[in-house]
Image (cartoon, rainbow, N blue to C red; front, side, top):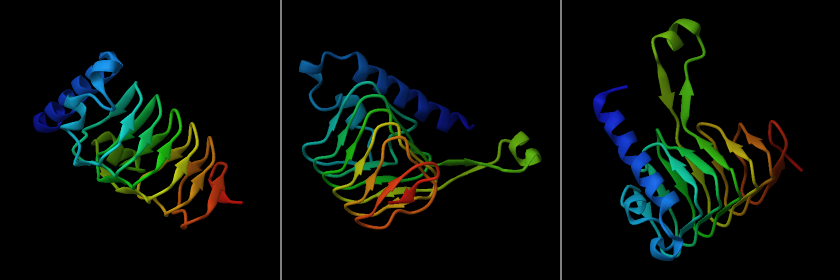
Amino acid sequence: MTPELEALRDTARQACWSHTTMDPALRGPCAPELAALFAAIGEGVFLEAPFHVAYGRNLALGDGVYINADCVVLDTAPVRIGRRTMLGPAVQIYCADHAHGLDERRRGLERALPVSIGEDVWIGGGAILLPGVTVGEGAIVGAGAVVTRDVAPGVRVVGNPARPI
């Protein structure tokens, strides 16, 4: 990891810590240090604590987004969350995709793929969204689902790997 990236991660860690430890009455919907990191943050966004983000600068939140406690966003690539979308507790969004070959992993090679979540999506607690997926508008991702492929608009998926029901 480069010194520049490590500095960005340290800034995000500090902002997440501030969000988690700040009195909610003083913090509002999101600690100011955390909101300042985001690529975009809409009106009426609310992040429960604790919350973790790798960098913050690649995360864009639409109006009315609600993120429940213990969510993790590893935003090594752009992550877009559409308006009025709700994430249950302990949802995890991963952009980092480590090399699959042993030699490449030993050299620290990885790539980052964006994750996009449409408007009015509901993601149940404990769900995991893997690198490169898109969840379409109005979709529902069941609790504990592991989303390995795109989810079409208006579709409900459950399981590991997530499949339509």
